[in-house]
Length: 175
Image (tube, rainbow, N blue to C red; front, side, top):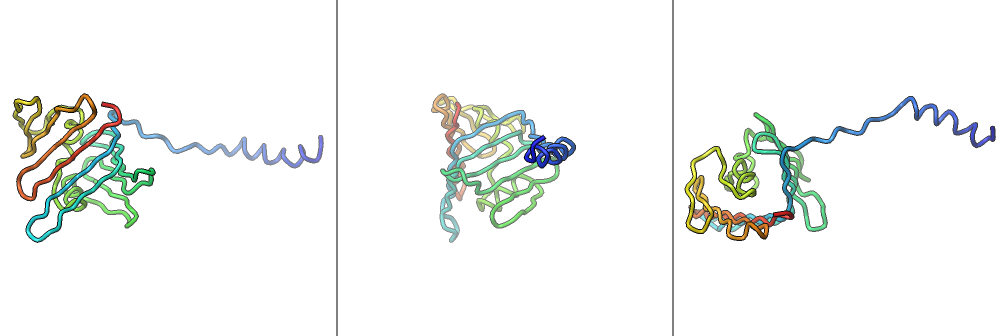
């Protein structure tokens, strides 16, 4: 046995005894990704606010994860939720919320129905609230108008007209 093999033998033995399991990957029932723009109009002395980011949405309204990132892929924020707990991790630290509505209101200054967004991005009304179809093939739900005219191209547009008006535009990577 050469000196090199003799020196490496104990390391090989340690490596064989100490296998490190990588963290288990979460298995998600649904996964969507693309670009997202949320615009809240100025209202009552508050300035207009706009958030533009890439998004990766996994899971469903009950249990999931939303990553928001820059065009270069830097993660801006990660939200994870399960029944009874919502957690937001950002460069400012971690913050917990009672539900997704409280999270969206904190981040955007206005509540956005994130629970419904999963279904809306799939081009269908959310089963958790009544809806009404519109002549253009979209629907109205929870005070929002969801436009599906360009869904085949991956575009979804949701608008809330009630002041302050809020517009959510999503461009899915895979329609």
